Length: 79
Image (tube, rainbow, N blue to C red; front, side, top):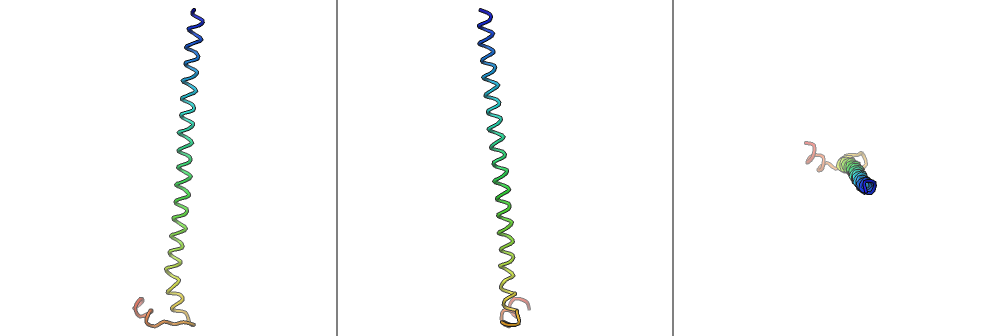
């Protein structure tokens, strides 16, 4: 009778430990996944910001080059 009770409670204890381990693993996996998503979002935002910077400077460079000097644009934006 005592052996059955010890076996039963041992099985319950093992089930609790297995559930806790599984839950901790799932939580860690979700945290890691979120870290990767955040890193990718930051990388994409940085790349888009760099592209916006290049696009913003593209028009002034083309309008003030020797081949196509746009005096109205230069006067409106630089003076």
